[in-house]
Length: 335
Image (cartoon, rainbow, N blue to C red; front, side, top):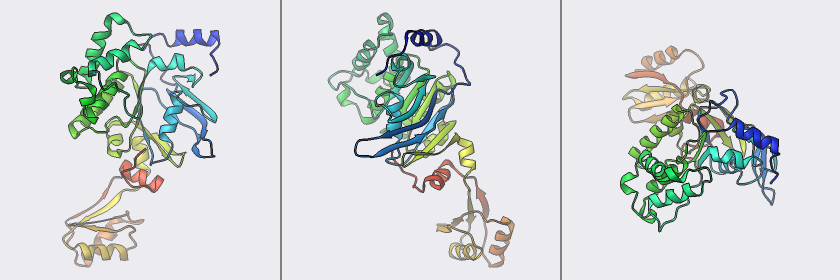
């Protein structure tokens, strides 16, 4: 790995001297340009990725299986080198500036690596002791605070091998939070959690963002991204399909026409005759793509045909609608 020059290192120490400094909000926390990874044998995992993660955002990273999300994260963290292109994290080139950047980054990637024979608390003490920037005098206080923040204080003395998958995820997140971080990278952070645990992690992510931490969150749960993220990017087949504010991505997709009626079969027939695409009949309702013309004309056609219309609306598009429109993939996709 190429070393930073003495001038670059000194600049990095002065610019990044402490996680509490006022970050430059105009400089992206993550920026890649034409980032590409081709494995031996010719497999193209990431193809010319131009990604921009604004400072202070909660950034969702979405994509179906094999889309290149995990490979991208590994390049950003300096775990693997790109074939070509560049990646900058906290304004510094990766992996060249890893020794300056990584102390300011907390990460939970592909599940936490834990010592099963140690307790949850002792695992965190080991993690903290491995950090050369951590003050040993305040180690136990930091570990206690991290355990409390992820709701594991009562299980701190239990051996990690006895933890459920959700508890292991919490412990991995606690390890990422031992020190204040400018950037937190989370790969499927709610994996294995029950609904209550998922809500708690979403609340924690929001709290971290409000404290000024930028959160980069990879997830296959689209509703999770929609609830907690301010921005998102969609990957498919190694390429970036779209990125931007979550609200803008959802607004770019068409919503669904929803007709509530006991006359489902007749309503579906009328909608198809009116040229409505993707008509789906369910229990007590029929949905389809919004009409190109006036929705009032469709409603009038239903009434004229004797359909008892009890509800007629166009639902706003969700992030799921946008994802499906962009990738052609269904809802439950894994990265």
